[in-house]
Amino acid sequence: MKGWSSIAATGHRSVAVAVAWLVGSALWAAWPVWDSLGVPDREQVRLEAPWVLTAQISGLVLLAVTMRREAGRRIEPLAAVASLVVADCVLRAVLTPGTAGVEVVHALPLLAGAGLGLAAGVLTGAGAAIASTVLVATPAETLPAQCLVWALVGASGALLRRLPTVVAWLAAVLASVAVGIASGVGLNLIGWGQETGGTTTHFVPGLPPTEVLARLWAYTAETSLAYDTVRGLTTALVVAVLGLPVLRMLRGPSHTASGHRPTRADHDLAAAIRRREDSSAIARLWAVQPVEQEKK
Image (cartoon, rainbow, N blue to C red):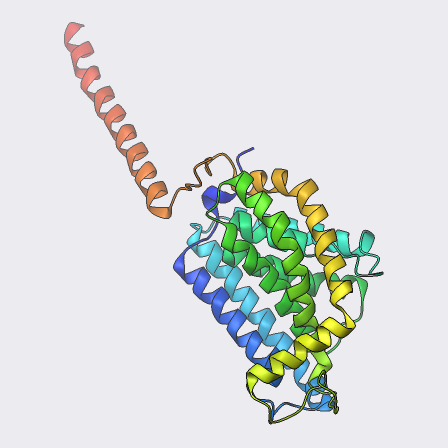
């Protein structure tokens, strides 16, 4: 199978757009961490969430356009992402009971990042979060933060992009458990900043970021750590079963065992060589024709 890696958008512009999208989304979702005094109340979050989601969708459209332009206006990179998003929607609708932490929806965004890079990982994760929520649930004010968490899962997979395919697959299996726990912390941040209290697990306005994060982790350990660990283990199971063929499909034969993948400059050079060979063939053809006429 040819795979998509040879035409995937991994240029600086698409990466810059993806990073800007992540930073912008994180500034809103992590408001209780960096500004615990000014954190919005529940009603303000409800009113702001649709506008934040609109901005996120606009950023994802810009990311998709940038990926297409960097791929020479070819549609294949977006076709790969669209296929993964549809597959993740099916997984959420059919294979995600949501009981005791059994969830598998993070597997494909993780593999998208490992197979196609940061931009595709972010676009797959965020796109799958939005599309699957629209299909199977009613969008709520928690969706922008959920969209960010899924995108971060895809971005974490991009850390494995330069590893050989088999090594990346094994690393993704191991990383899935950590991703499950980390995503649980991020999902717990949704609404936690609007529920103050007096215990060491409650959010308290005015605390420094380190103390806020310590309390958030204590809250996670007390309420959802077991659930998050099961999510990580089920993600690891899906990656163990499907990860290697999916990575090979996404990367294709151009990603060798050594981990090297062709750059944009490599493709431009190959195209230039082909054009030179074609021009040489045409020149030889024109050189032969006068000789044949003279013999006649």
